[in-house]
Image (cartoon, rainbow, N blue to C red):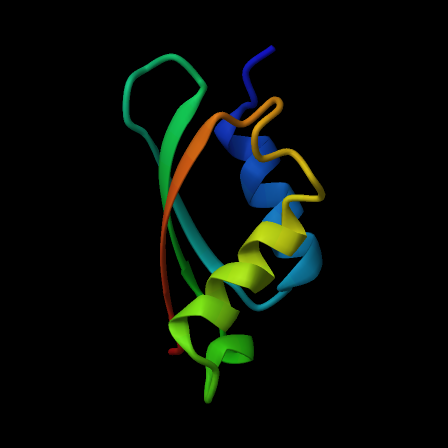
Length: 76
C-alpha cells in the first residue's frame, strides 16, 4: 500500500520537530517521492549523516510502504 506524503512528513517531524519539510510525489503513484528537509539537527553533520537521520525517522518504511525517496537535506 502506498504511503501518503502527509504520513512521511509526520514521521520526519516526529524525529526532527524543527524541520521544514517539502515533499513532492514524483510519479503520482504514492510510491516515488522527493523531499527536502531543513533542520538545525543537520548542522555540522555530513550529508550521509543527515540522510541517515531522515531514514531513521521513517521508522523502517523504506523498501516497504515507501518504495523510493530522493532526499535533499540542509541546515537553516
